[in-house]
Image (cartoon, rainbow, N blue to C red):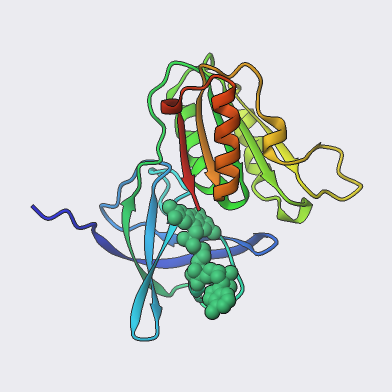
Length: 231
Ligand SMILES: Cc1cc2nc3c(=O)[nH]c(=O)nc-3n(C[C@H](O)[C@H](O)[C@H](O)COP(=O)(O)OP(=O)(O)OC[C@H]3O[C@@H](n4cnc5c(N)ncnc54)[C@H](O)[C@@H]3O)c2cc1C
């Protein structure tokens, strides 16, 4: 039996800058494409004579009629430069869905930690979890970026908070301006207290995931309750 992942052609519908170097891209959703929030697709980026695969987490929900991604454009990056110049209406190739970073059934509270574009898979995971669980199942998000210009989707998080009373979130900036009155420091400075029984989901760079995981383990969270995706 073949285990190859199916390929799809998707068309760019919308592209907008939502923070410094961070773009929200929406593509058409192919017929028959289904996935679980937290999963990613691999775009096959035309690169000279070959196609270079690059992974991007899906931030939309399965019943949305588009596929949404949140991509940090790195200067000189193969995929970043490709997406920077990709025009609306142009088709591109991807395959998926891929990955096992998805919410497991757990009776306890859930704690999400995201830094930067690590919020991409997590926002869909939170929305799908909040839809499934009742208000007794508390869902917390800690979102960290460097400075104010790096913030995005705060209005979306605010409206999720209105929609799902069991959801709350905190934002911390590691290098805020003097005007910033919110939390300051890295996400590691603001890990929740009394989280021994929580299910924890982390997404961001390798250092953040390593450091947060260490703190969670020290706080009594079992290793099997810590799930992560490293970008
Ligand atoms: C499971 C998974 C999910 C992911 N989801 C997301 C997501 O949702 N959003 C997101 O933004 N990212 C995501 N990523 C990261 C993404 O896959 C890419 O790694 C990232 O976008 C960079 O790709 P790129 O092709 O633009 O850069 P690359 O070409 O891979 O280059 C990476 C860096 O190296 C530099 N570089 C390249 N060539 C040279 C050179 N010759 N000399 C000096 N510097 C050089 C580039 O400027 C760039 O800064 C995810 C990764 C994984 C594994």
